Every structure is written in structure tokens, then in C-alpha cells.
Image (tube, rainbow, N blue to C red; front, side):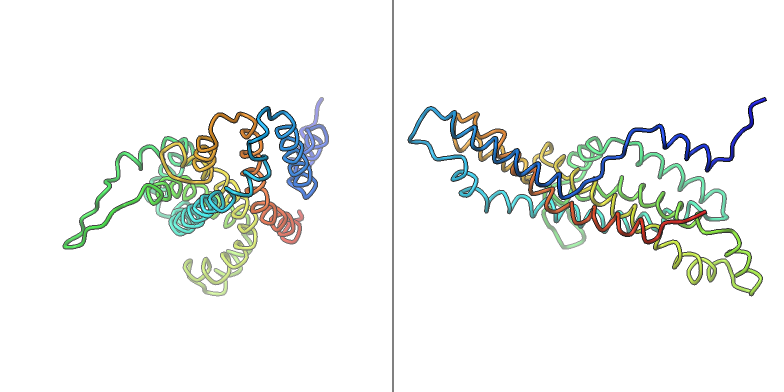
Length: 279
């Protein structure tokens, strides 16, 4: 008769047969930089017109513009993460609420925005939100990038809610029972005992979510936001019919994202090892 193994042993055996997990490292950055140089040299060598500027000169000339667009990507990611974290924290606490209707409503909102495609949410925000807002006697313009911030903050909110729920529920039940025996109310248990321990476990997945969000800000280019991807296309148009610039320019954009995201990935791994839960 087969014996059902405990869950940790099953996971250990399955992980030994699984494919290796590829993590972002400095070697990948060197590889990307090498490929970019290789594409650039090959593009210069294949250039038929000697009067054209070299690919390196084109990249140097358009770097300030591309960095300006990349700064917009970073701004969108920071604002979306801030709004999504603030809303997701309350939604996550509602997921563990003893109030069943509130918990059910929070679960429905979380599942909807977690499973909704991010690009669809962006399109909804772009076309549903008005361009001009009138609040009392005040009237102001709502730019496209701010609508992208709202659209991206919704899936972030749902994912942060799951991070909060998982972090709180990862704390052993003995902590709840011990604090209850000392006369703490549920509010005091949550804010004084449970959440301070859970925040350390929430931080690595929260940082990983931010890295994913940063790369996803390029979706804003599809809805008309002048981010780095949109500006890269404009650079190609401004340089005329030069297909040799396609790989170097988009590879240059890829390097920008790598340089920004790699420190986040490195810090996430360090925190994962530091706060790893040993059963």
C-alpha cells in the first residue's frame, strides 16, 4: 500500500525533479551588454551608407530623450505601487476579517482584479476616465500617464491584498492565542503583535511585485503614453529608414530596465534568505 507523504516531503521531492529556477544576476547584465555591443558593431559593419552616423553615435545622441521616457516609466511604477499598496493593505485586512460579508466582498474584488488582464484595465482607464475633471469650481486636465497609474494600481492592489493575507496567515496561531490569553483585543493583536512580524515576510514578495510592475509599465506605450518604448519608436522614425537601429535601440532600453531592476532583485533575494521560515 502506498503511503501518503507529508506535504513538506512531497514538495521536497517534486522540487528535486523540477526545472532549475533562473534568477536575475550580474552575469545576465554582462550578457545583455555584450549582446548590445555585438548588435551595434554588426549594424555598423552592415551599414551601406558611409555618411550615416554610427549606431553608437545615434545611441549617444538620443540617450537624454530615452532617459526622459524611462523616468516616466519609473514615475508610473512608483505612483502605481504606492496607490496599490495603500488600497491593497486595507483590502488584505478585509480578506481576514471575521465579518463574513466583508470578507466575501473583499475576496470578489481581489479575484477580479488579480485575474483581469493589465492591458484591458489600462484601456478601460484611458477611455472611461474623462480628459477634463471638474470638482466644484476647480477644473484640471487628467493626462494619459495619470490614467495609466490608476489602471496599473488596480492589479497591484489585488496582489498586495494577497500578500497581506498570506503574510498574516503565515504567523503561527499560537501568537494569536497567546495574545488573546493576555487580554489583547483583536485590533491590538493585529496591529501590535501579528502585523509587525508579518511585514518582514511580506517585504520580499512586495519588492518582487514592484519589479514586475516596473517592466509592465511599458504597456502604457500601447495606450499612447510617451514612455521609453514610445520614444524609442519615435527615435527610429526620426532616423529614417534604418532597420540596423532596431535591435540596438530596443536592446539599449532593455539595459535600462535591467540596471534599475537588478538591485531590487538582489535585495529581494537577500531578504528572502534573511526572513526565510524554517519549519
